[in-house]
Image: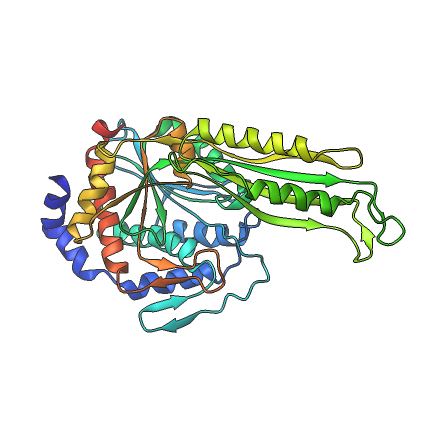
Length: 387
């Protein structure tokens, strides 16, 4: 198989011996220390742009959404190009304490694994390409994109697709903490912002009259009593609730954000219809609801037997990791939905994603970069059969 042949070549063997996890960690921390909440990624984007410039990428661009693009030319410009991407945004606000701490083989820090390590992996690949003067079979576009998290709604990768889609034959998406997992399927996601409105009043004088907070609580209680199907896996989560303006007032307004997901678009649609029917049950004189769709992530997939999926599995086999085939919600959703073969893979293990005590494991990073490099070079070699 091509992965094993690449791994046994003298050039790749030399690269394997030279891989430096410490340098990757240093870069990951440098990235993580630049706040980059969704919709405010500009400072981190500029940092990546400067790195791309130092590595000599061609056709370098920084667009209005803080996506950074650059092309590493291949041997055959007539072939479709490969895209390798990592998102630069994080779920953490600009004022969150980004302090790093180390405990044994773990490094802790908000956003370190998701996705500062992914961005560091992207830059580590460029360092290898430059140092060893690698010329892949096809052009490779390196992309650091914005707006993957939360209400970003994949707008970053949407803009990337508009700019590059016609040139691409396949894509590899990097997530810091997904080592061993191959995300070959993107689940369907809908996000609703539901606002309850009521006339309001005084808590004592107007007791018993409608309150927006009470209406929203009733709706929430009914929603969490719903039982979506287990197969295909379908889920919901009330992630945010806001409302009211004082403890002794009947609230005039209250709102929540609802995340709906499913492996099957039909099941997602059915769940959304149940939610809308539930809203109609709770709606009454003095209690009204406004529903706004704030997120719509499309579903898509390639099979486990697809050549790109199998290349990813073969690369993991080189580092003695058994692949786990997964569905999830990543930037690859948008690419798969548009018919582009894409997988999402990782660099290390970790945990507590989206928490202040998020951590990554440092020991697997060398293997993570190695299998990623092999996958990229093999995908480039076989681009004509992937696209």
